[in-house]
Amino acid sequence: MILDKLDNAAHYCSCKPGFAKAFDFIAKALESMPEEGRYEIDGDQVYAMVQHCDGRGRDGAKLDTHRKYIDVQFTVSGREVIGWCALADCTPADGYDEEKDVELFGDASTAWIDLPEKHFAIFFPEDAHAPLAGEGKSIKIVVKIAI
Image 1: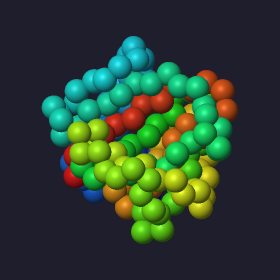
Image 2 (image 1 turned 30 degrees about the horizontal axis):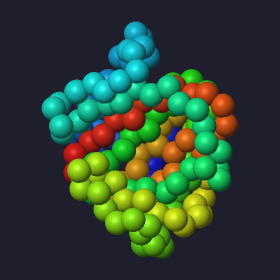
Image 3 (image 1 turned 90 degrees about the vertical axis):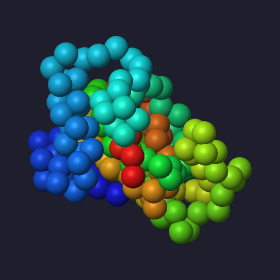
Image 4 (image 1 turned 120 degrees about the horizontal axis):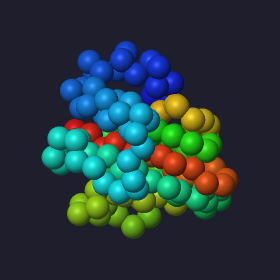
């Protein structure tokens, strides 16, 4: 997992080609905020979802992982909180859904990440994460980058 400010995004662009495309989309979205929905950046290799969300609180946020994609979660407005737990410490709840690329867990998060405006978190397949653990409304951009 990586946590940082958007101002530092360039440090991560060489880690994986999709990161540069993800941060470019986010930067352009901040100039002219797109409507809520899915946006293809590079077909199914890199795509974004603009979301207007209601926080579920820590008790309502459930851990999940993805096998096919890395998540870049960026807070545009509001205050997001995301739970985290190492995948190796989690017990699957319902099994992996290949079509949705998600596996859910009933475990509790071992850490909570405050993700204020203009900050991002990158979650890799070994990072179980529980988004929308904050309170109130937020606008987020989630960019999916194929492994």
